[in-house]
Each structure stands twice: as structure tokens, then as C-alpha cells.
Image (cartoon, rainbow, N blue to C red; front, side, top):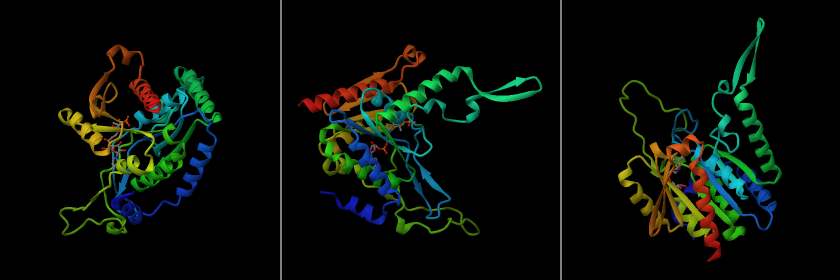
Length: 310
Ligand code: PMT
């Protein structure tokens, strides 16, 4: 049973016009999967909350999208089909190393009195092999990338994808690495036009309402048979594990992966009901280009197998 908060959220924030397109893509993608292939939804990036209906200003959640993009790659390589729900323009699997200012990719070569731009030699092989990987995954129907920007888009898509994955039962895995806004301005309270500054206004007061915790509905009604893994990001290490444990207890799902903003690329903690296991990359690992997502994804796949054996 869906809770009233969630129902109210979806009434107050109507579906984006793109929803039926997303629904069709998800359905087609799931239909293409062979019987034995597991499917993971990887969410990535941060959600955006507008301050005005004709949006000029907004509040954003931090995430570059590396965790999600790298993890999607490792899931693909391990044979999973991946639905990658990502913040538009954040990092994407297989091409994430080439995103950023285009000038980073090219070098200017001077020939006589003229000059031309060329891809840096050091990147050519990497670029070719990344494009080959991407093409390979697309041919095998192993990767579906769906962009979102707004919080409302993210939540409508999450619900729709979960409904689409329900038929796969325990073959589905949810890997929720996106940083989702905890507060928003409901559509009916939002200014139609750009909020004005000017004479007599010495402060701006905003009233925001909590976003319902959708993890609860995912676990209880949208995907009750799937393996659900959420992430917890904190900046204060003294509360990290306690907050991760609280989330696990509150939502009753299988695993919380806890990380601190400053060390998220080299340390994470796996928090399950009766234990905490830390994973740290050494300086040598980092120097050798080992990515923590490689280990995280292996652990998640192991847990998925174990859950499906019991
Ligand atoms: O992208 P990078 O720069 O590589 O960084 C990766 C990361 C630090 C963003 C990632 O590893 C991470 O920790 N992501 C989760 C951030 C976080 O704590 O999000 P949250 O507090 O908004 O949500 C915690 C969990 O609850 C999430 O799994 C989210 O899906 C869920 N949630 C959140 C809000 C809400 N209203 N409903 C939810 O279900």
C-alpha cells in the first residue's frame, strides 16, 4: 500500500510529459533481456529543485556522477543489464573519462604557418576502447541511459522503472547512488515568475516541504522482491555509521553503503543489519588506477547471488 505522502506528492507534482517515452523505453529494454540476465537500476547524480515555475533559480544536490557511472560500467562488465538513471550532463558510463572541458581532449599541432586541433595521442587508445565497450553494450542491449534533471522527473521515473522491473522479481537490483533532495517547494506554493529583489527586501525567506522518503515505497510496494542498496553521504564521520544504520532500520532494505564526501573515492563502509565492513583503497591501488566501484559492485553482486540462493 502506498502511503498518503507519496500519493500526495504525485498529485501535487504531475508527471512530466516525457514519462510515457521513458516507460516505453524501459518496457522494450526489459523485453530484450534474456531469461538468465539480471537487471540493475543505477541512479546517479543530484536532483534539482526549482525555486520558480519559470525557473531562473534552483537548489541542487551535490554529485558529479562518478560513483554511478563507474558502477554502471562494472555491472555491465559483470553481465548485468543496466538502466542508468542519471542527471543530465553528469558523467556517463564508458565515456566518463572524456567528459569535462573539450580542450582537455585536444592538443594544437602547428604545421608550418598553420595549426590544427587533434585528439591527444595519450587519449586515442583509451577513447577507441571506451567507444568499443559502449557499442558492445548497446548491441547486447545491456545499457539503457535515461537522463533526468528535476527532483519530480527523478521520482516519477524511479516509480515507473520500478513498476517495469517488478516482473523480474528477485532478478532486479536497485543501486541508488543519486543524491536526492530532502526538501522541495510544492508546485502550488511556487512563484510563477522569477522571484524579485529590490527596495524593501533585505532577505529572502523560502518555505520548503520534506520530500517523502521514496525508499520506503520502493521496499514495501514498488519492488518488494528486489535487492535494494542505498547510499548514505555525510560530511561528519562521527555520525556516518549511525545514520546508515538508522536508514537500514527505518526502510528495512538489505544494504546501505556509507561514504564521506572527502574520502568517497577511497573508502566506503558496507552497513548491514548486524555488521559494518569498511573497504579502503591503498595508495598503491589508487596509483594503479584501481577504482573503489570495482570492489563495491563485486560485493553487491555477491549479495544479490546470496539473496537469490536463500
Ligand atoms: O557522484 P559522485 O561525485 O561520485 O559522489 C557519489 C555520492 C557521494 C553522491 C554517492 O556515493 C552517495 O553517497 N549517494 C547518496 C547521497 C545521499 O546521501 O543521498 P540522500 O541522503 O539524498 O539519500 C539517501 C538514500 O535515500 C539514497 O539512496 C536515496 O535514493 C534515498 N532517498 C533520498 C531522498 C528521498 N526523498 N527519498 C529517498 O528514497
